[in-house]
Length: 262
Image: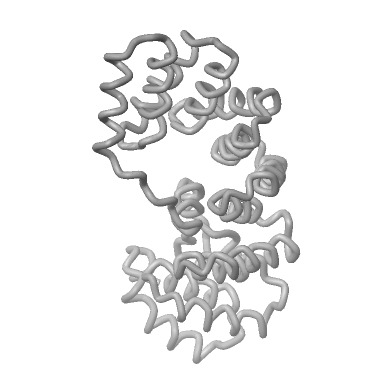
């Protein structure tokens, strides 16, 4: 647990394996082992521990999520989605479970169902700005702008430093012909995420529609120098989402996909 608490997960794994051999019925620390395997990128280890956990608790939503994160990191997106579906069925109130499923669906451009999952996560955690941001983005991609606007605005009230809601608000306003508002919103998205391609591209298109061809060309040139970033894994998204709760105690059931500290 000292290695685990110091985030030296690979070093923690052999000791946790030995502890599990001596206390095979200890579910919370078996979950700690699974987390250690996941965060040290030992994905087969995660799946092995997952099957062991099922013998202790056949309805462990957290274990299903861990397996799903491992599959996603191995680029097995179909099995990752299925594991998160299993987790939702096991416990629809598990923190992050709907967000995880929604994000996996969003990455596969299944925006209709993704929106439903982000909405459910927002019902479980009304102050989760990221779930609201991705819910709104899913609605924007479905051209449901009237549905998306109030969700975007709520997300920004909770956290104005997210790039995605500013981008989506700009798309909504640009589509409605509110160019001055859209210009400000796209510029904010660029400032918050200067390495992202989409804000620059959207800003360039807006400048072009406004007849400012010099500014449009400058923004288009920036898009050519940037590489579209790959979507983060669901493991990375869930860890980031719950990092503020990293002081949770694993012996108190290791309650969600954040890193539980000793």
